[in-house]
Image (tube, rainbow, N blue to C red):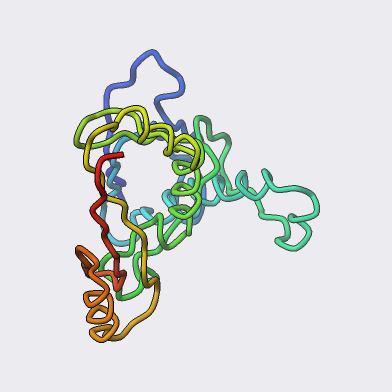
Length: 208
């Protein structure tokens, strides 16, 4: 059976393609392929043409074997050794993981990142090592200490009216009407409530 796959004209860069030589898994007969990297590649064909054999039993199996080999010897003893697929050589292939579509669950918001929990590590990486910028001004966001915030208010906002917000209730559900009425009787200038069940007490201050 013929095997159809997405192809692009090969360029001079060796790392831009996954090169497969002599794939013989199952019904494959010494198949040679060049699959472009960083592209969405679709393998199509008739039933029994070898789609799964080349995609899962050859490319993925070799990538997973390299992924397991990147672990420490201590971790590998619990995972066991993986056999090399029946192929002469595969170049340009990085360690990989595979997600079967039927195991993604019923959540429509599930992605490869959430299923593999890679998203949690990526979020932590961007939070700790990345630089955040304001989408309103485009300026880099920085973190100030309490002393720096105080100096900023005294130096840059002298003679101006400022608002100080402090969380009043965190992570608690329910209604707090009596609490707000009590605060109102104490002549608090303004109180507000947002959709995250967080309540803030706002005080308007006079110029410093």
